[in-house]
Each structure stands twice: as C-alpha cells, then as structure tokens.
Image 1 (tube, rainbow, N blue to C red):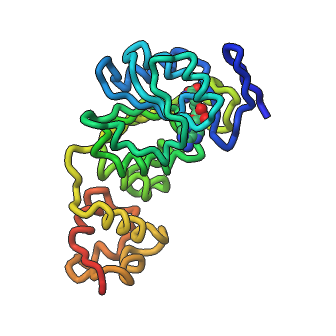
Image 2: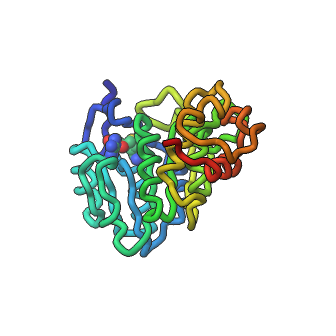
Image 3: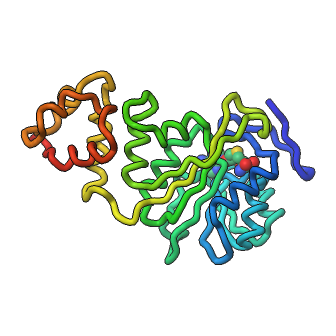
Amino acid sequence: MTKVEYKHTEIAAKKKLGQNFLLDRNITKKIAAVSGAAEGDNVLEIGPGFGALTREIAERCPVFTVVEKDPALAGFIRSEYPQVRVIEGDFLQVDLEPLAAGKQLTVLGNIPYSITSPILFRLLDFRRLVGSATLMMQHEVAERIVARPGTKEYGILAVQLQAFCDIAYLFKVGRKVFRPQPRVDSAVIRIVPKKEDPVRNADGFRRFIRTAFHQRRKTLLNNLRETYDTANVEPGILQLRAEALSVKDLIDLFKKLSLLQ
Ligand code: SAH
C-alpha cells in the first residue's frame, strides 16, 4: 500500500476509495478556473482528499462545502480549511436538496474513479439543482461520455448525459501527476444540465435507453419488441442498432413508442 504524506498527515492511500492525489498545482488551478467558481457561488467539492483542489477553490470562493468519505481526510480538511463546511460521508448518499437550498450548485471534483458512473447518474438525478459540474475522471470514461454515434464508446452513458446536459471535454491529464500513480490517464469535462428536459418522462427514457442498448449487436426491433409497441415507428429505423442513432433520433424514437401491456 502506498503511503502518502502531506503536512504531517500520513495516510495509506485506499484503493477502494479511489485515492489518487493530484500533485500538479497548475492543473488544480486550471480546473478551478474552468469551473468558473466565484465568490457567492454555491460550490460543492466531491472527494477533496488532501485538498489539492480545495485550496484553489478557496482562493476564489472562501465559503463552500466538501463531501469526503475518508474520516482521516475529512479531519484534515476541517483543520486546514476551518471556513469550509465538511460533510463526512458518501457522496452517493448525500441529499443535495438542502445543500442547494435556493441556489444551484457549482460542483467540482477529482472524483474517485471506481464510482464515476454512479456519481454522474446521481448528478443527473439532481440535475435541477446543478448549475454545472467540472469533473476529473478516468480518460476512457470521459471518452464514453462525449462519444458520437456509430463508435464503440457510444452507449448508455453518452446518450443519457448528452440528452439532458451540454457537455464539453476540456483537457487530458496524464497519469504521472498523481500519487499513487493510477494505471490510466484522466480527463476533465464540464457538464451543464439543460434548462429543459428533452422528454417529459425522464425515468421512462432511461429505461428505454437501457433496453435499446441491452444487446448492442441486436437491432432495435429485437431489443425493444418485448417491451414496447412499435406500431408508430418507421420500420427501417427498427432494423438499425441503437448505436447508429443520434441522441436526437433516440429521443424522437422514444416519443413514438408506448409500453406494451
Ligand atoms: N481531490 C483530491 C483527491 C482525489 S482522490 C485530489 O485531487 O488530490 C478521490 C477522493 O474521493 C479521495 O479523497 C477519497 O477518499 C474520496 N472519496 C472516495 N469515495 C468517496 C465517496 N463515495 N464520497 C465522497 N468522497 C469519496
């Protein structure tokens, strides 16, 4: 196990908590800058660790909230940044409603890679409360989020996020600037939930996307026919695979389907 020491606090980096600490100050500065976080914003940092990003956020916006699961690191942030509100716990369990009380959240984080997708889907569930999320994640996951139709990266994550959010891939970060060094590179992306959902039934759309991509190599017809009435859909479309359709085409298709009894 790699020991990581910072300002007289030593912890054994916990793989399970996705602990890869950022060392390069230029990068943390850049992430804070592109997030746009400014004084008066309602900023929330996920997984501050030893505070690499926390320090840069604090320079822009003195009072904000962090969520850290590791008690030793939560204690470290409490003592280093007394003005920061520390929620010690699992971000996936934290209710964002009271945090966003009255003001949308500006979310930031170099997030634990093992739970990147659950974090993204949780932010999506709370999208009405999120003004933007600037996140560093595993490079492969960032590629899956911004993927275009017809590529092998294009799937549930891309469609769900692109349907409900505007997404920008900002920059890549090599693995060498972390300790312990991960086996993969990282990337920073910025997610801004759209003002309006493209569909009225967001849960229904989520289930539809899961069903449409269930067996990627099957046609839409084969994936959908047990669950949906496809009578209103042009037959040619149903002979394609889900991965061939743009996000907009998938939204249009969803609107033409009804559930079988
Ligand atoms: N932001 C820091 C640390 C990144 S490592 C830096 O850039 O150096 C990921 C951090 O997320 C660790 O501090 C880890 O303890 C924390 N973490 C892991 N799982 C978490 C969860 N479910 N909720 C909140 N924090 C979590």
